[in-house]
Image (tube, rainbow, N blue to C red; front, side, top):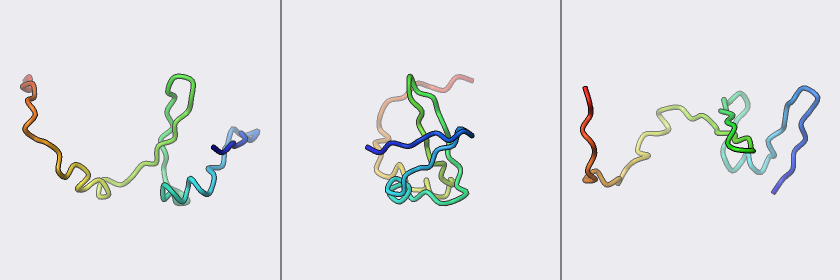
Length: 68
């Protein structure tokens, strides 16, 4: 676990080991969420990167009908 410091301008630096593991690049957008008593940073990825993400999902699961 790594500790970071909040600057006087409320900025934090994402540690290099985390940036490398997640492939975060300069200028990339990251979504910040408050979840209970913590802050979660989620890197936003282009939709093209999501292609094939659900490959192999079981589509035979029963679903509710859409309401018009």
